[in-house]
Every structure is written in C-alpha cells, then in structure tokens.
Image 1 (tube, protein in one colour):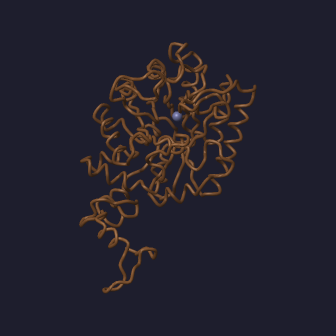
Image 2: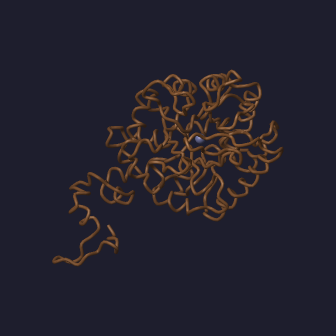
Image 3: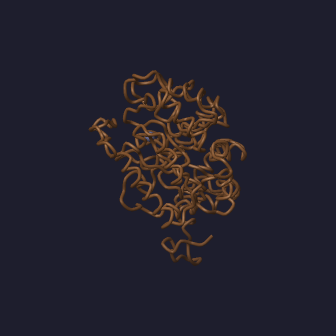
Length: 372
Ligand SMILES: [Zn+2]
C-alpha cells in the first residue's frame, strides 16, 4: 500500500499511514470491516479486490458529467470509472429536457409546448456533446455484441450511449436510424413529457399503455439493434412492450415499492417488475437519495432480488438525475464499496457478477448485433 502523503504523520516508529489513522479511529478494524473509499476496499479486502477484477460493472442509467445539458463535461468520467473499475455506463441526455422543470414539490412537469423542430435540434446538439466527450476523455462506445466484454478485458471505460424519451423523433421514425448511426444503442421510450408512444407514470394515462406508434418504435429498435428501455412507462405500457419486443426489456431506474403505490409515483409494484423479468430483462435499482447510504442502496438491490430473482436485477443509479438532491451513489470510484457490500450480503461471486453488470450484458448482446 502506498501511504497517502496527506496522512503521513511522524511517530515514534516512523511514519503512520492513512490506514493506521483510520484503524485508530475504529474505521478500519482488523480485516478491514468498514471501508470508506474504493481504494480502501482494494487495499484491505483481498477477496473483494479479486472479484472486482472479474466482474463487468455497468450502470444502466446515468446522466454523469453533465450529460443532460451541460455545455462542457463536468469532470473526467473516464478517470472515475477507471479508478473504480467500472466497465460501462449507459449515459444519456433527456430528449424533453428543454421543456421540463422540477417544481417546488419536487415533481417534474412540462413548462411549455416545444417549438416544431426544437427537440430534434436539441438532441442533435447533445449527440455532438457526446462525440466530444468520447474523444476528449478517451471513452469507448459499446456498439456491437461483445463490446462490453472487450471493454472489460481491455480495462477501457465505455459508454452505452442512450437517450431518455423519444420526443426527439417528433413523429418521424427515420430519426431512430439517425441516432443509431450516431452511436446510440439504448433507447428509453417515454419520459416526463406526454408521449405519442404511450402513457408515462407521472401523468394521467390517456392512451391505454403502448400506442401503435410505440409498437412501431419497438419494432424499429429490434430491427436496428437498440436496447429497449421501458422506465417511466405505466404498467399497461410495459405489458404492451413485453408483447411487442423480440428482445428482453430493460426498466433502467426505479425501486420496488414496499407499500401501496402513490399516484404518479416512479416506483413500481412487484408484478410490474415481474413482467420485465418474464421477457428475460432487467430492472435497474435507483440510487435514490431516500436510501441515505450505500448500504441502504445494497439493501434495496437485495429486496428486488427477493422478488424478481438474481438474473433480473441490476444498477440504474440515475447519477446526477435528482435535481438538487444527491444520489446516494454519485462517484463511480466507489464501485468497489458496492461490490464489497453485495458480497457481504451473502451473494455468491457469480451472483454479484450478474447484479453488477452481467445481466445487462446479456440483454445488450441479445439486442445489438455483432456487426452493423
Ligand atoms: Zn428518469
């Protein structure tokens, strides 16, 4: 272990390392019971460190580094992923971003009708932002079957480029082929703004779930090779999507409700999640601020596994997607802590591997062809 110079203190027996200080404070007991950083895990927990090398870490839903709307990247995402040994992040902007706003009650609402062409132009400008991010930070794009495994093998941080909501289409199916050409491989059908693809959870339903256009979009995703994400959709929309899609569904960011669902909630029932699981798909657990700690987040993942099974749960942190509130897991450098906590929950090494990314890799490889 290289001592961190910040924590080197002169003592009777020479310098004292950061770990000594933490141990003295009871933070790191013998055997390394409680680690505070990803680096601590790699230094103090041999088994978790080994596991970390073997697993493919994927976040199924993220707006990290300002992907939603910042003019320039907020930080070096690739460096944080490399530090935490994360392999891939499904990184997205929100297609309806220019016309939605969080109100004082923390509910996201549409503020005005978009101008014709506005949301397509907005998405085009974000696609250019992604091009710049990939180039300036040395990120890879996962574009074909097997690319996530290759990124892991090469220790090369990757993004699965995604878009949250299909408002950029403005009714034109051919826009899907254009975003696919620009590197998008993961598409969420609906978001906060009402959609002609189907009903979302946060407005009163008026379309009976998935619309014929929504079915056409799924067929086009299946044809082009895009992962289909039903987050924000109503139960009826998810049922329709499960019937329509030839590939497994992702529901990238939510939590299973522990009690009766409130109106307009973004949480889902166990039955809602089981429809996703029945397609062979995966539900991503939100690192929502309500969890208050990483351990609480891992408890949420564990509860979802109890209902949906270990093959159908993953991470969908919604990094930077909570407005003023901080997600409970905001820095990919902390991935080793999550791996350690899952292992200590009693999941086998194989099951930890599934939860942290293998389940998503399975769906990605079933959705995206080996060659264009
Ligand atoms: Zn969302």
